[in-house]
Length: 117
Image 1 (cartoon, rainbow, N blue to C red):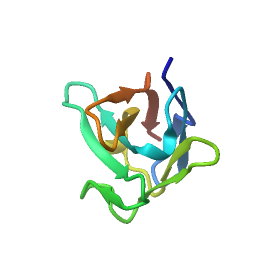
Image 2: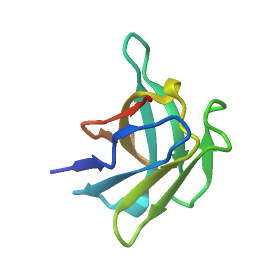
Image 3: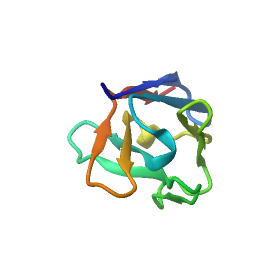
Image 4: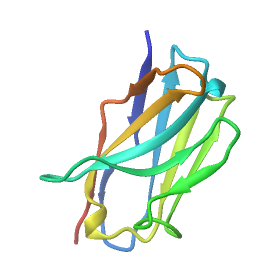
Protein backbone atom coordinates (compact mmCIF):
# COMPACT_ATOMS: atom_id res chain seq x y z
CA UNK A 1 0.00 0.00 0.00
CA UNK A 2 1.44 3.31 -1.11
CA UNK A 3 1.31 6.19 1.33
CA UNK A 4 2.55 9.74 1.07
CA UNK A 5 2.21 11.54 4.39
CA UNK A 6 2.77 15.28 4.51
CA UNK A 7 3.59 17.23 7.64
CA UNK A 8 4.88 20.64 8.65
CA UNK A 9 2.02 22.87 7.59
CA UNK A 10 0.51 25.52 9.82
CA UNK A 11 -0.07 29.20 10.40
CA UNK A 12 2.83 31.58 9.86
CA UNK A 13 3.19 35.33 9.59
CA UNK A 14 4.19 36.99 6.32
CA UNK A 15 7.95 36.82 5.91
CA UNK A 16 8.17 33.65 7.97
CA UNK A 17 9.33 30.17 7.08
CA UNK A 18 7.99 26.63 7.12
CA UNK A 19 9.42 23.30 6.10
CA UNK A 20 7.08 20.69 4.70
CA UNK A 21 7.97 17.01 4.74
CA UNK A 22 6.50 14.15 2.79
CA UNK A 23 7.31 10.63 3.94
CA UNK A 24 6.73 7.92 1.36
CA UNK A 25 6.13 4.23 1.93
CA UNK A 26 5.19 1.37 -0.34
CA UNK A 27 7.23 2.63 -3.28
CA UNK A 28 10.83 2.41 -4.41
CA UNK A 29 11.49 6.03 -3.55
CA UNK A 30 14.66 6.40 -5.61
CA UNK A 31 12.75 5.47 -8.78
CA UNK A 32 10.23 8.24 -8.40
CA UNK A 33 10.27 11.87 -9.33
CA UNK A 34 8.78 13.85 -6.46
CA UNK A 35 7.11 17.19 -6.11
CA UNK A 36 4.74 19.56 -4.43
CA UNK A 37 1.53 21.07 -5.75
CA UNK A 38 -0.73 23.54 -4.01
CA UNK A 39 -4.35 24.53 -4.29
CA UNK A 40 -5.81 27.72 -2.93
CA UNK A 41 -9.57 28.17 -2.42
CA UNK A 42 -11.30 28.76 -5.73
CA UNK A 43 -8.15 28.14 -7.73
CA UNK A 44 -6.77 25.25 -9.72
CA UNK A 45 -4.05 23.05 -8.34
CA UNK A 46 -0.64 24.31 -9.45
CA UNK A 47 2.84 22.81 -9.48
CA UNK A 48 5.11 24.48 -6.94
CA UNK A 49 8.32 22.51 -7.19
CA UNK A 50 9.59 19.17 -8.39
CA UNK A 51 12.73 17.10 -8.04
CA UNK A 52 13.73 14.25 -10.27
CA UNK A 53 15.11 10.91 -9.15
CA UNK A 54 18.58 12.22 -10.00
CA UNK A 55 18.09 15.44 -8.03
CA UNK A 56 17.33 18.01 -10.72
CA UNK A 57 14.88 20.62 -9.52
CA UNK A 58 12.34 23.01 -10.99
CA UNK A 59 10.13 25.72 -9.54
CA UNK A 60 7.11 27.81 -10.34
CA UNK A 61 8.09 31.40 -11.11
CA UNK A 62 6.07 32.58 -8.13
CA UNK A 63 8.30 30.72 -5.64
CA UNK A 64 11.73 30.88 -7.27
CA UNK A 65 14.33 32.18 -4.86
CA UNK A 66 12.06 31.60 -1.86
CA UNK A 67 11.32 27.86 -1.86
CA UNK A 68 13.73 24.95 -2.05
CA UNK A 69 12.87 21.31 -2.66
CA UNK A 70 15.16 18.50 -1.59
CA UNK A 71 15.00 14.76 -1.07
CA UNK A 72 16.60 12.21 1.22
CA UNK A 73 16.48 8.81 -0.44
CA UNK A 74 17.72 7.11 2.72
CA UNK A 75 14.66 8.41 4.59
CA UNK A 76 12.19 8.14 1.67
CA UNK A 77 11.33 11.76 2.28
CA UNK A 78 10.99 14.90 0.19
CA UNK A 79 11.10 18.36 1.72
CA UNK A 80 9.92 21.81 0.76
CA UNK A 81 11.66 24.66 2.56
CA UNK A 82 9.53 27.77 2.24
CA UNK A 83 11.03 31.14 3.14
CA UNK A 84 9.79 34.72 2.85
CA UNK A 85 6.23 33.46 2.84
CA UNK A 86 3.48 35.67 1.46
CA UNK A 87 -0.28 35.62 2.01
CA UNK A 88 -0.68 34.40 -1.57
CA UNK A 89 1.23 31.24 -0.61
CA UNK A 90 -1.78 30.22 1.48
CA UNK A 91 -3.05 26.90 0.15
CA UNK A 92 -3.28 23.19 0.76
CA UNK A 93 0.06 21.69 -0.26
CA UNK A 94 0.10 18.21 -1.77
CA UNK A 95 3.02 15.87 -2.23
CA UNK A 96 3.14 13.63 -5.28
CA UNK A 97 5.31 10.82 -6.55
CA UNK A 98 5.61 9.70 -10.17
CA UNK A 99 7.50 6.65 -11.31
CA UNK A 100 10.32 7.50 -13.69
CA UNK A 101 9.35 4.86 -16.26
CA UNK A 102 5.76 3.72 -15.89
CA UNK A 103 2.70 5.93 -15.81
CA UNK A 104 1.89 5.66 -12.12
CA UNK A 105 1.59 8.52 -9.72
CA UNK A 106 0.54 8.91 -6.10
CA UNK A 107 -0.71 11.78 -3.99
CA UNK A 108 -0.67 12.69 -0.34
CA UNK A 109 -3.67 13.94 1.58
CA UNK A 110 -2.43 17.52 1.74
CA UNK A 111 -1.31 19.88 4.48
CA UNK A 112 -2.67 23.37 5.06
CA UNK A 113 -0.34 26.35 4.93
CA UNK A 114 -1.79 29.68 6.02
CA UNK A 115 0.21 32.88 5.80
CA UNK A 116 -1.47 35.65 7.73
CA UNK A 117 -0.76 38.32 10.31
